[in-house]
Structure formats: structure tokens, C-alpha cells
Image (tube, rainbow, N blue to C red; front, side, top):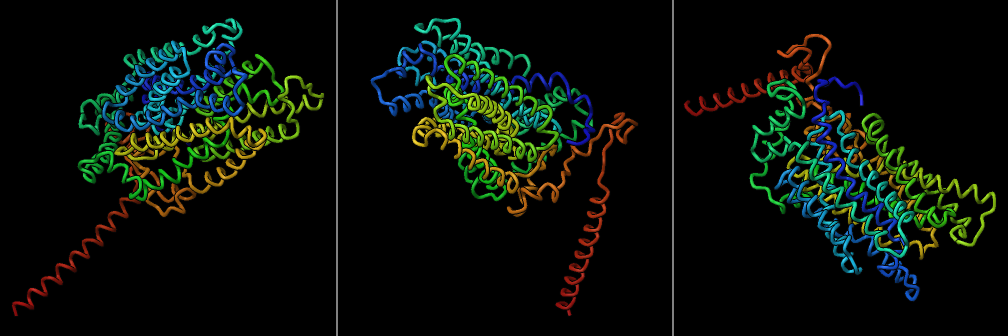
Amino acid sequence: MGHDDSPPQIYNRTLFLSVFVFGILGAARGYDEGCISGNITLPSFKSRFGLADTTKSADYLANLKSNITSMVQLGSIGGSIIAMYTVDKLGRVRALQAVCILWIIGAAIQVSAGSVGQLYAGRLIEGLAIGQTTTIGPSMTEIAPNKIRGLCVCIFSGAVYFGIFLGYCANYGSVLHQPNDSDIQWRITVSLKIVLAGIIFILSFLFCLESPRWLLQVNRPDEAIKNLSKLRHLPIDHPYIVAEVSDINEQVLEEKEAVESSNIFEKFKSIFTVKSYRYRFFAVSALAQILGQWSGANAITIYASELFSFAGIKGTDQLKMSAVLGVVKFISAYLSAFFIIDFLGRRRALYVGISVQLLSILYFAIFITIVPQADDVNYVLSPSQSKAARAALAAVFLSGTGWTMGFNSIQYLVGSEMFPLKIRSFAQSLVMVLHFGMQYGNSKAVPKMLLAMNNYGAFYFFVGVMVMSLFWAWFFVPEVTGRSLESMEDIFNLPWYIIGRKGPELCPDYSEINKITHTTSRGNTYVDNIAYNIDQSKIEQAYIEDINNNKAESLLRRDSEDKENEKKL
């Protein structure tokens, strides 16, 4: 990340509380994944919704299971589309509050479900809410200082695993303390969604401030400056505030001049017709979602309890190991947020994460190839097989660590920080449509992949995807750690084949905010310890260009005068 010479006041309680509320919204998606992962193994849930029906074929039950688990992902596609409108129309805070209400409605329908149809309806409505969270949550990049932008977004991605951990623990506790023939066993786990949504809803009124960038975009400059001042704990006339507002306002004005009346169709068209947008969407954001979702991490999260049986784990120990997996992912996600993503940078974190995930999944695939009978309830592992099984179990945990370090962080960061303000919410929503589309397809496909590919074949497929991902990360993904949001455009206007490898080197960040530094001595501004750094080489270059321009204008003027004189003669 490098030395941070920003004013220390910008890292404060107001900022972190606002980031926390937006960030914890990630638990909405996570809790559902952890909750449904265990629900489909609970005897009472299986009995209520037909998953324990021995008269049905294995293919029918696999399809029913995938329908139940993937219904939230299907709803999330619609939610992501809705977010294209609501996040820019309502603002970031109001959109968050509306989502909490919709989330509560969906959860209430599920808690009271007596049939699989009502369960589908509740999960679909919950998906409409969760689909919007993945646009609203990462929008915190708009209030985050450049140096900790990755950390702030990773609060959201880490909260996904906090939610997964809570879901796993809720299921494990429920199966231990509630009878298997009672619907209370699974209804308790689902009802916690209402509690979580209610807490976030209340906290949003207490601690959240609307994005200054959005306020400037909708012509509310006084509120924007006021909110930015509160978020940075600096007076409104402080050089840092003036510089940051200047950067944002310059981009907003440029975009308004370029597109006087932008609508959703023009934004969609620009994704395909504007070169820099096209690269950001297809080469970086879209591939991050496609490769990430088919790397196997989502399959392990949702079907963890069943996959642990491949490593010889039986009975309620499957739920216990799922809870341990939740702890591992939760801790590793926040360790990545605080110590990796802004310090190593986006690309290095992605390299390391994909490599760890690849090697772990490869070992797990080799194990279930050699010991396919490990999931047989009646089979007793030999001492050597038992040791290998424990290593396979560890490999599952380690793959989760690699995922949180690599793809999990990047999949939210790339859309939220690379696109310009004009289409940021729209593009992030479109990226999340693809995200949930891939997740839905993955959730539907994995049960059948395991049946058709003898279990191990699916994991070799995931390994192949991750090999391709390493090349993609090296060639297509530029390092943008520490850059201002307004400085991204220069990188993506370069030729496509050098953006990922050389873009940041060829296009330094010359934004106003990066010229403001906090010094130990008196600076050159009216504020103590604040200096405004001017790039002398740029001034000299501009001076030379100005001289050359003046010479050219003088020659043109002289030539024009000569022609006029000739006409007179």
C-alpha cells in the first residue's frame, strides 16, 4: 500500500461506523447460504419438503434440492436488475433501508412455510433483497479514503462469511437441542434472518451518511460537502476536503456534459460502445464472476455438509465441520481485509488466493478419486486412508482461505472501484446479475455434476477453471490499489493488451486528492501540517506546450495576414 501521508483525521469513528453498517449487509447473502446448506440435511426440513421421500428417484431429489437451494440466487438476479434503478434513484442509504424491509418479508414467508411452493416464494422474495445488497454494500467505496478502499469493501465480502458462520452454527445448535420430528428445528434458523435485517435497519438510521459522490451527482452540493466533512472529521474549507470535492465535481461535470439525459438504455449501450467501459465490464468484471463462481467455492459453501462425507465425516459431525469451515472463512476473510488486499495489492492477493485454492481442491479431487468409498456410512477407513482423509478435510478448509483471499475480495472490488460515477451503480448491478446468474447455474449444476462425473470429476473441472484464472489475473487485471476513483479512466483508455500488465505504470494518478499530504512540519497551505504537492515536471511540460501553441498561433496569424495583404494588392 505504501506510506499513507493523508491527514490522520480521515480515519475516524464516523467513517468506520458507516462502513460497518454497509459492510455487515454482506451477512444477508452469507447467512442464507450457511442456513440452507444445513437445512437440507436437517431431518425435520427434509421430511417437511419431500427431500426424505424414498419413493422418488435420486435424480428427482437432486433436482428438488437444487431448486430449494438456488431459489435465492434466482431471485437475486431480479434484485440486481432492480438495483440498477433504486440505488441511483433512492440513494445508497434509503436503498439499504428498503432492502431490509423486503428481506424481512421474504424471511417471514419462509418461517411460516408449510409447503415447498411457499418456501420457493419466500426464498425468491428474499433473493430480490439479497440481489440488491451486492450493489448497495460495495458502494461504500464512495466514502472510503483511497488507501483503505480495499479494506472497506472487504468488510462487506468478509461479512458474507460471518453470515455463513452464523448459519452453520444455527443449524448445528438446532440439531443438538431440538427434536428431529419438529419443524421448530429449521424454523428457528430461518427466523434469525428477521433479527439480522432488523438490526441493520435500525443501525442505518443511527450511523449511516449518504454518499457525497451521489449527492453531487443529484445536484445537492451543500449536503455533499457537509457529509464529506463529517466523514473526514475535517472542516468544509480544509484543503483535503476542497481537493476531494474538486476531483469528484470535475468528473461529475464532465459526465453531465457528455451525456445530458442519460437513461438506462444509454448506460447499457455504453457498456458495449465505449472502449474503456467494455474492457472493464467484459475483460475484468464479467470474467471475475464467471471464473470465480465456477472455481468451486460456491459449491463447497452450499453443499459443505454433504461434501464432508466424501472425507469420511458422518452424522452430526458434518454440521460441526461446516461450522468450523464457517469460522475458517470468516477469520481468513477479515485477515485478508486488514492485512492483505491493500498491502499486497489486488493482483498479488489474487495470485496467492487462486494458487492456494487450486492446490487444495486438486488434493481433495485426488483423494476422492483414490478413496471413493469414504462416503459410505458402513465403510471403515484404514489408518493410511484415515490420515489422507484428515488432510482432505484440511484441504477443504484451506480452499476456503484461498477463496477469501483471492476471488471473494476481487469480485466485489472490481465493479465498485473501476467504473466511473456515471455508470458505477448500473455497472455494479449488471455485474451482480451475472454473479447471481453464475451462482444459480452453479447451485443447480453441482448436484448433477457430482452424480454424472463420479464426484471427483466435478473437482477436476474446478481445478481447470482456476488454471485459466491465473492467466486471466496476470494478463487482464490492472493493479489499482491506492488510486483515486476519479483516476481510473486513463488506465482503461490504453490499448487493451497492455492495460493489465502495464496500465498503472503508464498512467500515474495525478488527481488533486493525491497532492494533499500530511507532514510533520508546517506545510505550504494555511492549515498546519498540510502540504499541496505540485508536480513540477507537469508544469514545465504544460509551459513548453503553451510556448509551442503560441508559436503555432503566431505563424497561423502571420500567414493569414499575408494572404489578406495579397488580396488587397
